[in-house]
Image (cartoon, rainbow, N blue to C red; front, side, top):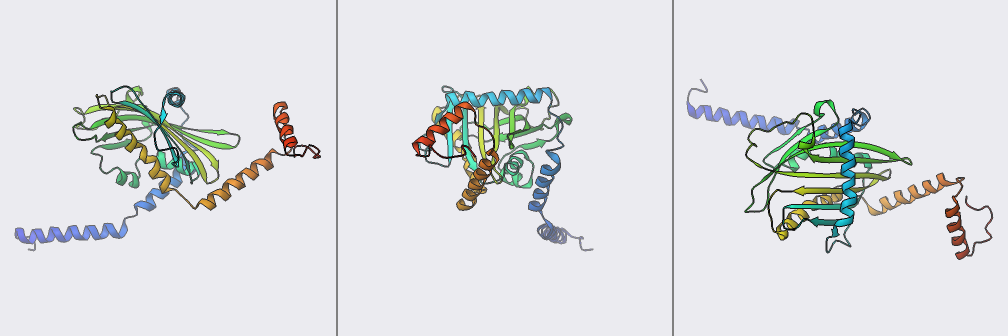
Length: 312
């Protein structure tokens, strides 16, 4: 009887929607779910990741080569010398292609930050990228550790949006007891397996992106992040406009650095403790001939030529 008239039906519908909103607000736990996903990825996902395939290894190697290429060509962006994030940019003529590099120290454990970068389909990431008309993620492509990211990017007025379809994978490397996490990415067209398609994107203009994130462990709770990204918008664009787009994109590094920023004194204490531990571990290890020569000269300059016991 309540739904006997359209007016009563509207009231019932509004009441139902309001109750649904109240239940959602009461029980939503996006932050908790994201935290559990990250913890599970660190505990189970990373150690149990499928072995790297030959194609994944090749893609990572090629992405790492891009770092050396950028370091030799890109120039530091004016006005960033004193910033906490180092930024470099190189563009190819007046086209829509450019490559940038950012380097930053992060006040967070390497494995935690790597997880932040890798998990692209958390609730927080969906909110962060809600302005993107299209954004889809497919994990474990064909049973591998790789994933596919398809996303649209808005350009300045006068230019049509671009569609990026990207193949992404990762590798964990350990050297001298310190871990390095590498996330490499390139156009999906380079992937020989399954390509997922998003309905309605057939007529969109495509663009490509390739690059790498390198997260190096510095201390237990700090790391160094190097990010290199090459983008080709497949369009002729004035250099000034391309620079603006690239610099805005690089601002993401600053935002993440600020997100994880901790008390400076606390971070400094951790670095000093890590250095002391490294010196402690070095004790008893004989110096190489060239190292011994440098060390002896330092002792002479310091007036400690007669110190007994040598290198402790």
